Image (tube, rainbow over all chains, first blue to last red; front, side):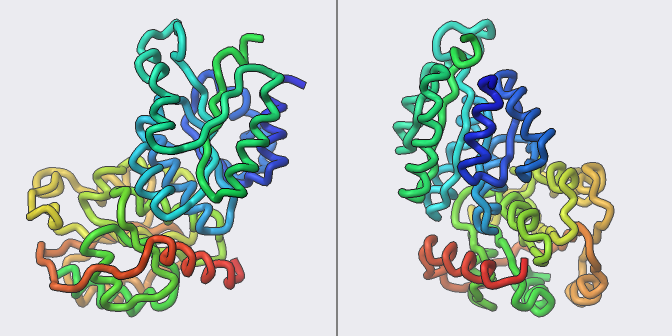
Amino acid sequence: MNIDLKIYKLIKDSGIDFITSVPCLLLKDILKIIDDKEEILYLPVTREEEGVGIAAGAYLGGKKPAVLMQNSGLGNSINAIISLLQYYEIPVIFFISHRGEEEDPISAHVPMGKITETLLDDISMRFWNIYSNKDISNIKAAINYSNESNTSVAILLKQSLWSE
Amino acid sequence: MKRFDALKKIIDVIDDQFVVCNLGQTSNELYFLKDKPQNFYMMGSNGLSSSIALGIALTNPKLKVWCIDGGASLLMNLGSLSTISFANPLNLTLIVIDNGVYESTEDQKTHTNRKTKLDAIARATGFESIFVINNREDIVPTFMELGTGCHFILIKTEPENVDVPNISLSPKNIKTRFMDSISKCDN
């Protein structure tokens, strides 16, 4: 089974039943699977912060939501994560493709790529790094932690995951 | 018309249905006029009330969901209009009360004071059911007309705060009682 299908299955099996996203090249195959299978209520959005707001509404409405985005979108979402999700204690699972951590063919990804983990630390959001196929069970661990602590968590999907 | 007077009319129609209300004075006034567990008062994340309402509406298609947003708040999240039209929930009404200023920060003018027309933006993003209300007495008749669908209602008001207390509920309390109310519904 390829990596994208594996991640999809983990998402589905964890009970996540609502997803918003802004696309990233790294996430293209996962997003296609989500869109094609139509097992999860899925809504593409215009900007990541908006996606956080919609996910929060889905949680209030009784769903278990996730947001799929690139790490650049974390910058767009900080205020919503803190003053909406954390302030009201609304748990959302973030799947974040991590561009620009090291060298990146698009150098504009590097400034955000280098501070992504620090930024998550600064907003006290627990995160799990997924570098390769063998780390993939950490996705389950992250979601379990979110369920038990009722907090939002981030799953950082590293570029190396797709270059194995 | 003052926003306070508009809200008095609006709550008569909304009654005990679910509302997401924009932060600041709008939420304070709604809380003062008619607090109920079905009101979700925003306290931060300015601009996101229509997004939160969309999430609730999509996941509970049998519920009627209302959003009371402000003009400047909607300007912060115009993409939301596009996403709402794309999703086209038939149970969501977006009410935008526009007084043309940032009232909470001492009345700096917003862009709707010049050329921006929020109803025209709503139409261009795909909304088909759009109403613009300038007089208080038109609120109830317009609202009574609304059938199933995704509606955009722009209410133009004068900038004038009414002296009401701040909301005394904790954010967790606002969330919990709102979710308890939804879970009791046939949604």
